Length: 109
Image 1 (tube, rainbow, N blue to C red):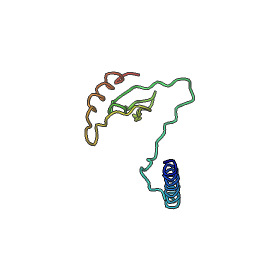
Image 2: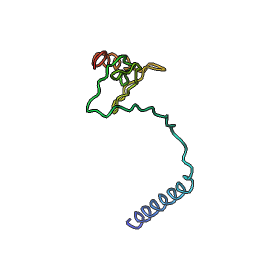
Image 3: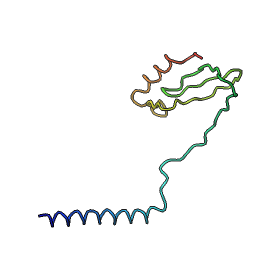
Image 4: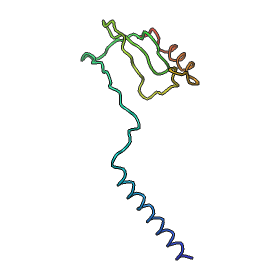
């Protein structure tokens, strides 16, 4: 009984090594799963604090704000929060997420 078990284990590990070896040889060209977008970053003045006013709630995890004396809105996406999207197709729960975000931050600084 143990002889069969040992043979099965040995064959199992040989099969794993075989497929890993093929994967390494064939894996030289990795397909691109996603494309990175260029990020526009806003440089904030070197001060301890900066005041911004939320001018628009885009969806549950994105807002537009105006910093200090700047008249142009800047789009901010919350880090670590992923809510259902409202565009291009409204996902289930997106309306509730947008409404709650609006209740919490719209027209506040």
